[in-house]
Length: 178
Image (cartoon, rainbow, N blue to C red; front, side):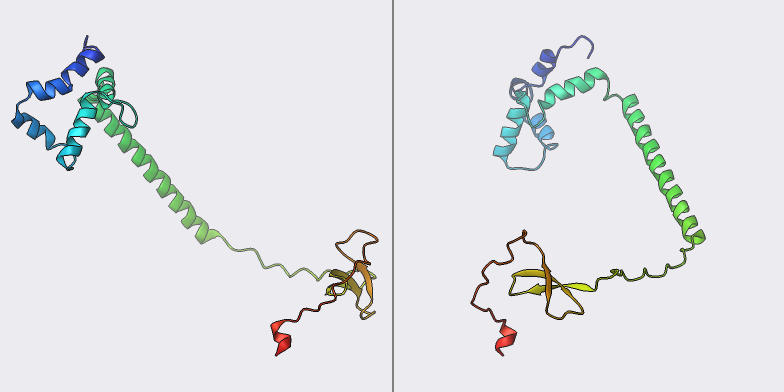
């Protein structure tokens, strides 16, 4: 393709060449390489291809010219790509084999650490309080274990708002109704 411009290449691969220069037997032989679709869709696809309309990522005719012009479709380029693919597959295989060997070695040599004793339960020094939901105050309250039923502090409300009215309607759960 030395000295051939993109326009000259596109003129050879054009709709007028397809219709005027090729006999029907040649067109049928070339159509066999196309995906099996109905005749109307095949005609639309050929028209779009040979008129250099951009299909998805540009014109395939322009892309073919660029690949041919760059020499990427020669047999040497194909052999080079094949060697690169083989080298990559070999590197992936070696990495996988090394990983398997490391994991096998780790499995055979690793011993788990001795179990740690459970941590002691948290202790509150000087206070024996628990959080309890109080329906009367409408939230969590801190109650002393020794003073049954005596609320020492209400949580989740600003100071001075503990005297909010409590709804008078008492809701009962379905279990209490039985």
